[in-house]
Length: 403
Image 1 (cartoon, rainbow, N blue to C red):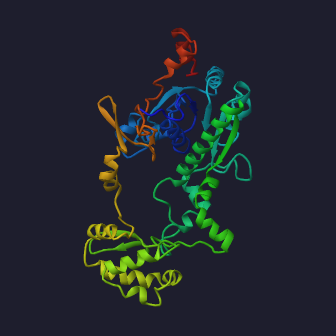
Image 2: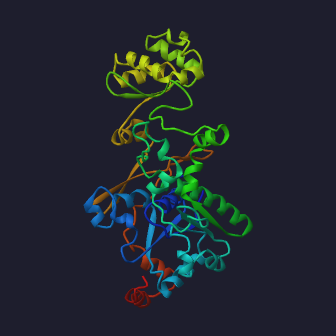
Image 3: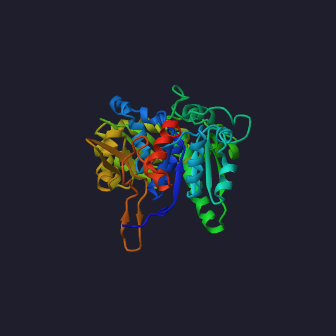
């Protein structure tokens, strides 16, 4: 099996719900050893979130399972001095710490970045928050939907009638976590080279806006205020979602040769000769008229048949699928995108990373978790024993409420 890039890197995950746990899940998929530090009183809120009430009642909610496989769980009360001291011991032997509390919370507990970098100068300390560690909004609580609205993402989602519209999954939490994981990987490389750690200040607002590159650039550099265009692609036409005789099809005939091939395929070779559709920019101007002509032709057959014909003709096209349909595609099944992990009598199904590693010999590592999401406090005793605490000391810590 291919050795994973972060093998041997130790990560302390003090985060909750999604942005931080998604970040550390990516690190775990890259090979890092991730120890999840949870509050003894219930742990990560995501343990009680998800569509399966029975799983949530067991503190293993579907939302938690999604981004915590491959990690271990240790409970610490960071308001208790003994809990703080255990954290310091863990920090001394770790490479990375990730938290997504509001700015200032860790400092007030006495275990903020400055204090922990004194314990371990090589530590990469990553703080994920809604707006960053400074600025007028720094101390406001952040939720994905709040950030989606404040970033402008909702203003360009949907169409003129439905916008502003929330993206259908927690995109700001996810992009914030991905941005954090990228920055951590770079900082770990630097720490290994220089022996010096650093603080990473991740703003979900900034991460979301930075992911909207083309949309933002149209405003910054062309003075054009982005508007919601539904399923249309603002950069080209015909490029968007089209209704067929049955089902819907995304078509991206962005290049002139693709447009010509599309028109030939649907029996409308005259369309490229129409002055409204003969040039790239004019097609964008008359996109609705062009869409009407194309959909009239597509009404003769079902989406799946059109997809096959267009693919064979070199016209980019793809079916519009539900999540169950998407997950069951042969493409994803063959590449083992979904993994099953046994948890007693139940099974946890999780997705691997969006990449695989292939070494020079052609051997593949799938980037999938090797263990299920942990039960709350499942690994507390083992790690405390490793740190030198005997059974009686652990029992006393538990009695005192430190763990």
